[in-house]
Length: 106
Image (cartoon, rainbow, N blue to C red; front, side, top):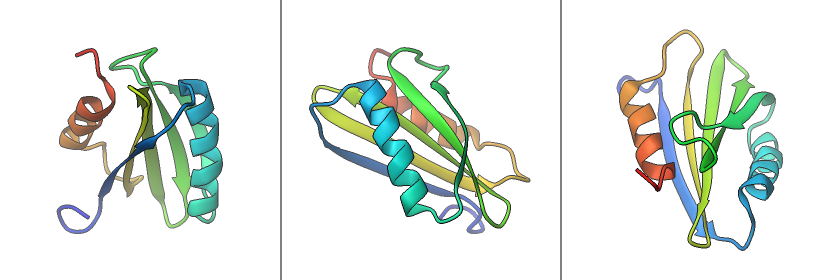
């Protein structure tokens, strides 16, 4: 957690033979299984590098939001989990870290 314990940021990477659409589907299932009560709000291209990465947004219990940025690069799946209270805006530092982690053509 960062700051006063309001935000969480996690990086995960593993080998895969799948594509970006396959990763989008599998991460959605895994996220709903991992986070009890999670509801998918949206899944779309990551606007900072469309076509290269995606981002899914979930509503979590207790007034929280989870954003999962994901990409496939050189046979590896990369997932970034960013959790925060709904009441606070996205951290520019967290968004920059997500971009650096999943936008490989920059």
